[in-house]
Length: 116
Image (cartoon, rainbow, N blue to C red):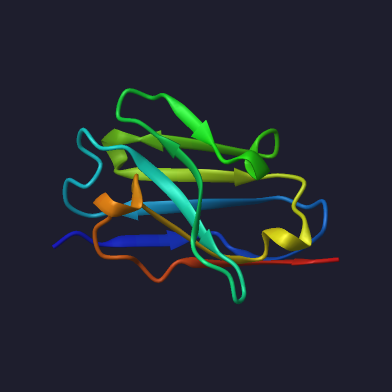
């Protein structure tokens, strides 16, 4: 069974940075696009960024210029560098296959809280 474990979240001041990591068991990474998603308080889950198996990267508009996604297929690891964080970035961040319709079981996520 595939398992996703996210980590790296925390409480930061606006303008601060965090680095999120996701480690997957099984072969979830193999030949799959992988992405980061987030869900803010009382908001729907939205995609943040994704990387295709070939390394092509896309960012949601709000993430451009501030967030950086990277993947290490050998380690089954997906990372997300968050810079210049804003209060509206507050939420729980998840990794999974992209797009969401191809997602496997969701992990617990990692919580990011940005204080103003």
